[in-house]
Amino acid sequence: MSKALLFLPLLLFSCITKPVKYKKEIPLSLHWELQDSLTDVSFRGISVPNENTVWVSGSKGTILHTLNGGISWISDTIAGYSYADFRDVEAFDSSTAIVMAIGNPAVILKTKDGGKSWNQVFYKKQDGIFLNSMTFLNDKNGFVVGDPVNGRFYLLRTTDGGETWDEFTENTRPQAKDGEYMFAASGTCITGIYPSDLWFVSGGSTARVFHSEDNGNHWVIKETPFMSGLTSTGIFSVLFTDDKTGYCIGGDYSRPDSTGITFTYTMDGGKTWLQPGRYPQGYRSCIKLFEPGGSPVLIAVGRGGSSFLKRSKLPGGDWKTLGDHGFYTLDTDPDGLVAWAAGSDGRVAKLIIQND
Image (cartoon, rainbow, N blue to C red; front, side, top):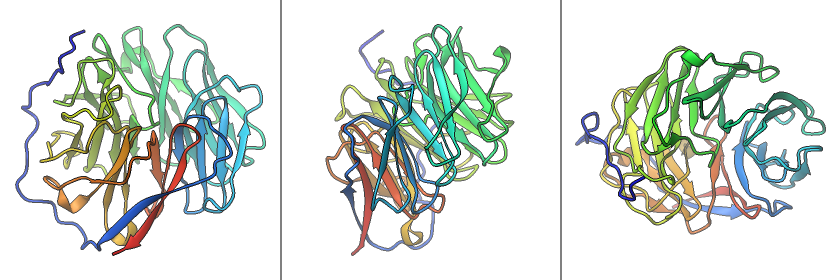
């Protein structure tokens, strides 16, 4: 594999000259407030189903959650799964959550009693299997995406809230290019919008966006000029805030301060992806939309630091630093009013807002 960065044709990409108009924004000052997470494991999954509840998942079978907005935390290792690295968690409320483990065997567990007990709802032992992330369109319909098996991306779906999971047939799973895969860096390389839109993103030899309008039965694939060409480069996270507006972020995880095309966005459901005037400083593994006081702000985190951008400043606005604390993943509640991040060494933090 060439060490030179591979920039694909830019035919589908363009810059717009006028920023999109959103609600009037208020000046904001943002900073992270670190929590005492009671552990030093690496966290890659986080889910915030409401303003008071946060679920976090990580290595050594560890699950962490709070029911009171971080005043107190409950940390536990799921019995029988201390070997597991839970790279993603999807929570519905304070009682119900689903966690996904990477590697072989592939494992998915569900709790309905706030983590007191867990039921194994999926188990698969197969050469090459490696799950990357989950997404749910509502409380019933969910999807899991994994690295290619036999040359095609691996896909699962549930229609009963994660009680059971079914594999997609091979002919409905999109083909991968040689050296193309996904990153289980933040639990956000797949996302969806109810009732039937799905997007997932890839990296490695190329960086592409895959879109389905029918719950994963058919896929349209878009090439991007995103940083790619190395095993450590590509798109790490995809976010859609409605069926038209989406964002991709990533870079090179082996070089946190690397420069290049690390962020793109779309205003037409992914048919075209736009290049902004500026990019976040360095590699970022997760992106979410934070909307305090009706002021939309894009938050991006990576192991080298975090950044934010007022959405009204696209296409050319500056990304501002949120400090040097490294995080792998973040999430906001469904209304975008609170934001939480998690990373290595048990690091968990809440985003604190101070109006200027």
